[in-house]
Length: 193
Image (cartoon, rainbow, N blue to C red; front, side, top):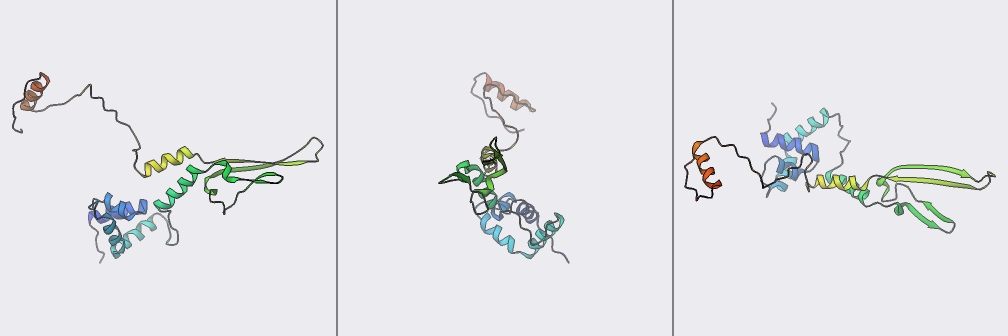
């Protein structure tokens, strides 16, 4: 017999599957923010939750050996992109400078495109290798980091203009109270309708 999850546990599983962050998943599932870290870790030890996460991975076509980059890993990659400069890939040598690119370069995640061509002089004698490097957009990386950290929200921005306020009133008592406020009269106490 399959053990059912509570509503909070199901939301926890879905949010953990999306983010890979147990504490954040617990907060989003409306567990107490003060205990979200502990509850997140405890939830991951529960067999029913482990089974649900396996089910979600299977539905998404992911195998057990495929791991999704955690929030921390994604932030590290975006940070590399945000901080990378072209000079990170240049090394000066005795005969000029050359490009230093490879997986051992800690900034290689910032590379978007590399093209290389050889140009010869008009006598086809002296060759020069021209290498172009294009980096990922650091502003976009910073924007994504800000969204991940909820520094600002995606979507419409609400501009609150306190010079104009429209209130829809459905009760007569509340309407009278608002009229008194608008006229500058000290409002009297009105019982809730």
